[in-house]
Length: 327
Figure (tube, rainbow, N blue to C red):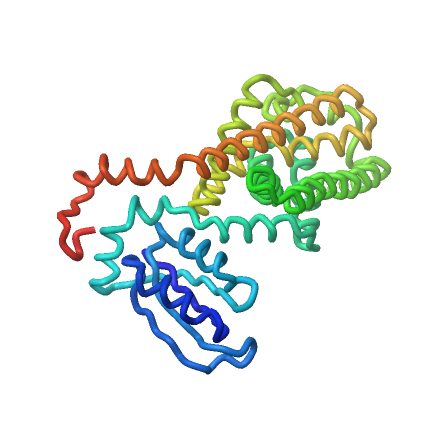
């Protein structure tokens, strides 16, 4: 698995950049177009690099000043069916699917912390579904609300910002997480009040036995345990680009359902359910943030060693025999 780099290089940095690329055994398909870049003025340099070492190369390019004075674009090809790609994959440490490209992680975190209309809309829709789930005591709707909720990206942004010292990213993520829930809860509370005035909702619907959805406002130690595990899984999926695992994370934590229950309890003024819902929401967010910080910190400190060790341990079972095409 390769990453494609498209570099806009000013004349003063061409030699430094080419030295980094030519001397790197995990770089291939290196091409240079002299003087073709107009803004900024300079050369266009393109190459493919093994995903496992992409972070180190990007750090080196940053150190020579390319990120400040030129341009860096990282693309992920879907297929690289040629022998040199296999050779590079064989000599790079670890497996490409386990590789973490930290500049890409930071960019995702920065994007997740930006407030958008879409984020607020999905928050309101998710909390609305959760409120209906409470009224109908429907676990299926609870799951639906969990999947629709957009809040995990902000949790990941907080974790990334704290570990990497990017406090502005962490602050924006925390503000958006809190603000998103406040806006969604207020919007759904208004809807619940209108429903109560029209007779569609009453206090008995909230206080009656709800065996399928009572867990939403009754946090316990397992709520925190699940939040820890889900937060770790989510951050690991985000940093290693395994988005297919995110759905499992979304349906594991009781954040949006708790917000939906809080909205109904606020509209109908059921204080015990408000308190329980707020506790459930807080426990889940805290658990995800704590485990997210822990996972990213461990990845920063130990991940490269883990990849090297995994290469030694798992290599005999991968079918690789040192020949091109074996991986």
